[in-house]
Amino acid sequence: MALVELRGVSKSFSKGDETITPLDNVDMDIESGEFVSLMGPSGTGKSTLLNLVSGIDRVDSGTITVAGTEVTKLSRSRLADWRAANLGYIFQTHNLIPVLTAYENVELPTLLLKLSSAQRRQRVELALEAVGLSDRADHYPRQLSGGQEQRVGIARAIVAHPKVVVADEPTGSLDTETSEQVQVLLQRLNKELDITMLIVTHDTDVAQIASRQLVLDRGKFLEKGDEGSMSSQPQPTPHLFQQ
Ligand SMILES: Nc1ncnc2c1ncn2[C@@H]1O[C@H](COP(=O)(O)OP(=O)(O)OP(=O)(O)O)[C@@H](O)[C@H]1O
Image (tube, rainbow, N blue to C red; front, side):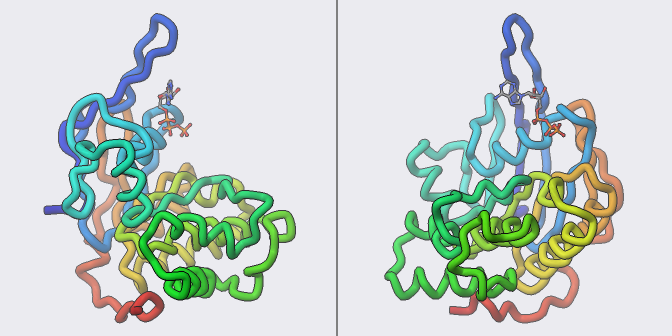
């Protein structure tokens, strides 16, 4: 079974008298260790797809299974716990809480996990180290550059050691150089920590860092190129999250 599996997933929205159906009976498989990019015209349902995979929104019909858990079956309260432990979400505009430090922002999702305070501290420190921001732990978002803020957002997404990270235009608000640094970081997390990635982007350069490129157009996925899954390539031993 694929790590992420969508079967017959449909989702509609009503706007006044109009019904929009961005996803109509779609299937998708993402294997463990893959890095998948998703492109497509505006309004085709890419963000909707990420929201469904992460359980932020509910399907109208169909099933979504992530790492053996059928997320479409979970109650709202169990979904929150499941998401905190299993799935990281990187936003375009990082959504950091301005009154919390970088450390506290990264710590936030771990408060939903059953961890001792020592384990929690260790996770946060490892996540900040993974994104190269150990020295900024006590800084508030306003004291960080746009790229650093995004890296804190990435640390927050990986702090629970999720199997899957989804990202919605993670480089969309960054300049070219900072975008390239974030792309390298995402690739590293995929290869070194074996985190399966699904990223939505409008940038073809960003899409090309993925091992598999998909395009969502008029409710269907088109494969742009399949170089094979990252999991079939030799992987360095994950070293950051061994404990
Ligand atoms: N909560 C909602 N209520 C009503 N309509 C919605 C809602 N969320 C999304 N939509 C509509 O569903 C369609 C798909 O939206 P979505 O944000 O998934 O597209 P997208 O492919 O991510 O677009 P973009 O590339 O511009 O970010 C759009 O027509 C959007 O207006």
